[in-house]
Length: 49
Image 1 (cartoon, rainbow, N blue to C red):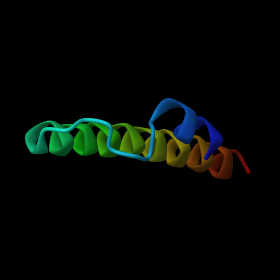
Image 2 (image 1 turned 30 degrees about the horizontal axis):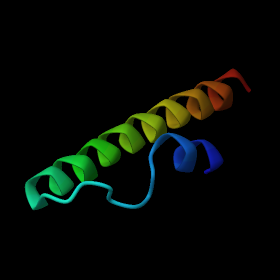
Image 3 (image 1 turned 60 degrees about the vertical axis):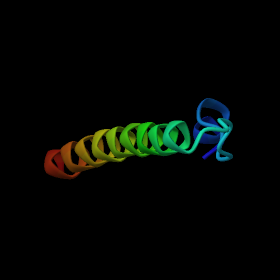
């Protein structure tokens, strides 16, 4: 969580509404990648057992 907060500020920083939506979508896209990567590594670890 520390890395997420450091890389992606949980606060919306832009003033324009459309830019805020884009910023939120970009944050979600990055978080989805992190979750998928973590799932892939944990699944690979489970399959080794």
